[in-house]
Image (cartoon, rainbow, N blue to C red; front, top):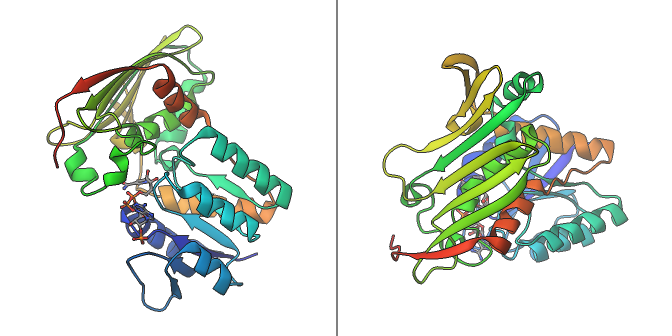
Length: 305
Ligand code: NAP
């Protein structure tokens, strides 16, 4: 079955990744968009998802590229209108929301796909294969970028539910939880600029069995971003760099490749729809949630764009 997508929220990621990936994926077409501010040529455009759902019977799937706050009502509207659903990460502002969506999709026999794009990065599978035959001793995550470069004007990341530095940090946790089973949070320090609602930096303590895992997320990075996870084993160290695009072992190349993250996500969504299946893994969002539940907040200097 062809997946005819209604894309909602024409912001940074929709334009940079979703539109090209849809155009690139067999069996997936862009059938309509909903945007408060923008329009595209040659595609029916609606002001919001309610208008799109009312007007576009041929749209059989919705892809939500809006911020996590407010996404639940849009997602529920899509499911109640009988459409399959693909969610940008994080899949919701709360865990309960996503459970409710998964239940609703199951009740209606619809596909729901909570995506984690970083899991599709070029070297992640090679890292999984390499780690599978070794004993993991220690993991260190450094996920640091300049918020002014990557999130200019995105007010929602600073409001409750917008995750702050966990918006990129959850990408690291999505890779970690795909490669290492049973990760638990042991402690967190959240550095929140005075007058803001979400952290600009966070330090997490985690563990998986006896494996100690440290994570440092920081939006105050100057210069190039650092999106790195280092896995120390009893038989060498593997480093995933550039957000999972490059893997080295003890400094020697293991794997790398072009960025096909979103093309893979849309192909997977098409295949899930065809198979009548869903995929909702909440492990990364659970860890972030635990950090907000138990982390120690520290007020830092005010942030201005
Ligand atoms: P963005 O640039 O702010 O775009 C979000 C779009 O959602 C807006 O342009 C707007 O589109 C729509 N929207 C609807 N309600 C909104 C509201 N109350 N406030 C702001 N926008 C609203 O954000 P983004 O970077 O594309 O991120 C969207 C989602 O994708 C987030 O969950 C984010 O974590 C995820 N993501 C982002 C990136 C990245 O590099 N930026 C990478 C991977 C995943 P209209 O004006 O068309 O209505």
